[in-house]
Image 1: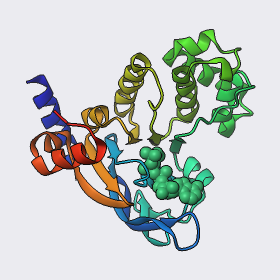
Image 2: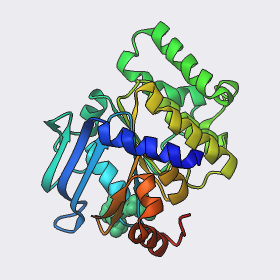
Image 3: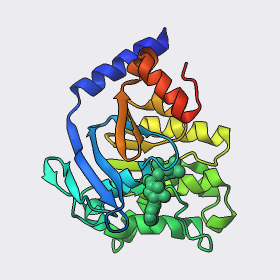
Amino acid sequence: MAETSRETAANGKWASARTVLEMQGVHAAYHGDISILNGLSMTVKETCITGIIGPNGAGKSTALKTMYGFLHPTQGTIALEGEEIGQLPPYEMMAKGVAFVPQNRSLFNDLSVEDNLRPGCWAFRSDRAKVARELEKVYAQFPILAEKRGDLAGSLSGGQQRFVELGRALVVEPKIIMLDEPTAMIAPKISREIYAFIETLPERGITVVLVDQNVRQCVRISDYVYILDLGRNRGEGTAETFASDDHLKEMVAEWLDYQID
Ligand SMILES: Nc1ncnc2c1ncn2[C@@H]1O[C@H](COP(=O)(O)OP(=O)(O)OP(=O)(O)O)[C@@H](O)[C@H]1O
Ligand SMILES: [Mg+2]
């Protein structure tokens, strides 16, 4: 019963939220004309969690990388707050308040936890007092990192490394954070902590784009979910739609080998 009212609330939230990022008919390729995204359209709404699911190789990571400027659309448009950003490089996206945590580990294993967090402070690096304050904020959010601030990042567990990556991305107080499989290969207990943490981001005014293989969790915490395959849209809806629409349920079960409740 509680779940139903939460889903209804999520549905209402999505319907009334403002669009902050919009992809329309995007095609993108890594090499020449071998297109990986084939006309993808997606809307990201303010302080909502927008989930992206789909089978391996569907183009989920490519969709995020294209939104963030690692790849540029060969056709179609990407607008941030109404401004076309499809041809901008990642550092300009960062300057516009968008953060990205990639699927592959992105820490320097031979540097300490603190030295891995410092690049997050790059924009205000000359203000040492602010750097110290912002690092303390990360440690307050993830107390385990405070204990391990001098340890080599490579010595941390996978989940703790994820906390460092999340902390580093959040130092600049982004408007939007893009997370690519934040709990892949992470133990269930820490995964639950990571999902609980992601769920708090909208309350802090942060918009989330979440690519996830964990369909159950992604549908549970997202306000709206897109299903991708072969770089195309294959289905979409709120958690409520996923629970009630037989076609969506079947699609998810068939493609992802997972029977949604
Ligand atoms: N750097 C690259 N160069 C060339 N092709 C790539 C590159 N990265 C991904 N691809 C190809 O693009 C397609 C989509 O890959 P992508 O990583 O976006 O899928 P995904 O949905 O994120 O999959 P997964 O669930 O395995 O992370 C795949 O066919 C993949 O082989
Ligand atoms: Mg991927």
